[in-house]
Length: 117
Image (cartoon, rainbow, N blue to C red; front, side, top):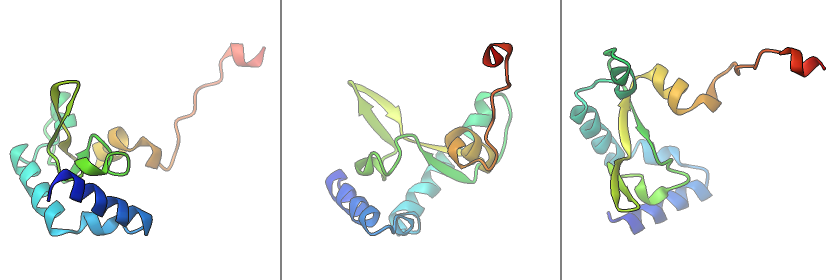
């Protein structure tokens, strides 16, 4: 499937609120397995901090809903430079770093003296 076909498919799934079908598709499952293998099943966020954790998720740097044509792309090109689009991450990093909006508890800024004045 080329990028245009992927974009059409993803946009159709989004329109009918069935994007989950992408994540259970044969194409995504094979690519996900390849990315985990490429990263030796290690969480890339933990690894950057000096820890080694088993990765069990693959994260899209360029979100599928915003960039559907990149849904099945390991990399993307921006201003002539190639970047990684899919990274292996553990569950905690996927939620904390990649999707903080999903956290059940929001971090609240402490009240400072300036806010009371």
